[in-house]
Length: 183
Image 1 (cartoon, rainbow, N blue to C red):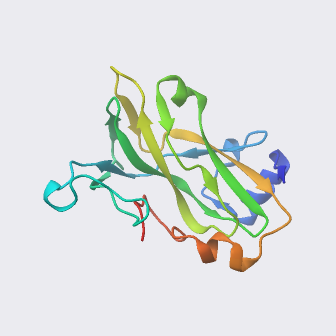
Image 2 (tube, one colour):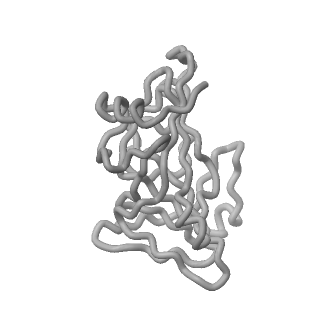
């Protein structure tokens, strides 16, 4: 597996593997990505139903509320967890995988991409859902629509058979906005 560099990233953008990317956002070995217009904020659970427990095995869902920040922002409170998404859309072929990395400015103010970062080959026609958490004790972090949130790095492999790729095995292909757990 090899890390893709600038010229290869430009080729990917020109081929439409990553949509809605400006060439100024292509770095030496990464592409900057921006925060989309919808987030999902965790809400207090209905204790009469689940007692606030979600099951990984059963693909339980958190109680969440979707908020549109198209004309504004969201202030992520200390310790708060949300789901968000990128503006960019991805169409990974059978030999390209990608990985999200939070930008260092975000990390330096206590923002963390808390969980999943990997995108398998054949992940297609989808924005990337981000799992964001504020690790600060005293400060909220303002998340503006279209702010630079991180970067994607891309890896080339020898290729993944279609029946083993994300397009067949994944649950989140075709996501056009932020998405919670799918059964």
